[in-house]
Length: 294
Image (tube, rainbow, N blue to C red; front, side, top):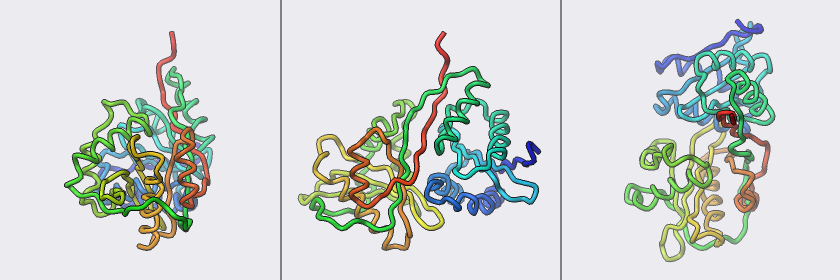
C-alpha cells in the first residue's frame, strides 16, 4: 500500500487481463472522451493485441480503481484522465521501480507534464514536449457539400500504396524516427482485423487519394485515426470527405460518438475536423525524456 492505495499490476494471462479491464473500464468510462485512447487500448488487449502491454491500477481500501496507467512498449507511459492525485502517485512509483526506462509520458494536461517533470528529476533527465494534442469528439456529422468520390475499405491489394502512406504519417504527424516505424506491421494490424479498419477515399476517377482508420472501440464509441493525405493531394477536401464518411459510417453502425487526437500545431487538420463536426473537449501532451546537456 502506498498513500492508502494498493497497486495492481495485471499479469500476462488472458484471465488476469480480462479482470483488469473489467475493473478499469468503468473508471476510464467516467471520462470516456478524454480516455478514448486508453479504452481502445484495453479493448485491443482483450482482442489479442499488445501482448507486451503493462497494465497498472491504483485501488483504494474499498477496492475501487482510482488511477490507471498503461504502456505498450516501445511507446511512452499513458496516464488516464480523472486519476486521484495520491493514487496516481502510487501507480507512478510502481512504474518507476518496474519500468524506469520508459521513454516518456503521455496524457491529459497538466497531469502529464507534472508527472514527466517529477519522473525526469528522479532520473536526472530533461523533458521535451514532443506533441501538444487536442482531444476531439463528434456526435453528429455536419452536413455540407464535400469533395466528390467515395470511401471504401482498404484491402490487401492496397498494400503497395498504403504502406508508404502509413510510414509517412508516422514520420510527419506522429514524429517518429524512421527506426521506430514498422509500416508493414501497421498495415497488417488493420486489414482483416475484426475491429480495426482502414478506409481510402477514391476521387471521381477511382484513384485513392487519402486514408483514414478506425483505431479501436470505447464502451459507447470508436477512435478514429490515423488520417493521412499525401502532399500532392492536399487542399482538395479529400481528407475532410473521408473523415466525414468514416465517422458517419461508425455512427450508423451504432457508435454514439467518434473520438480522435490531432496535433494542435497543424491548424489545417484542426479546422478540417471542426468542419466535419468534431469539437475539442480537452488537451493532452506527449512528453519525452532526453539526456541533459553537459
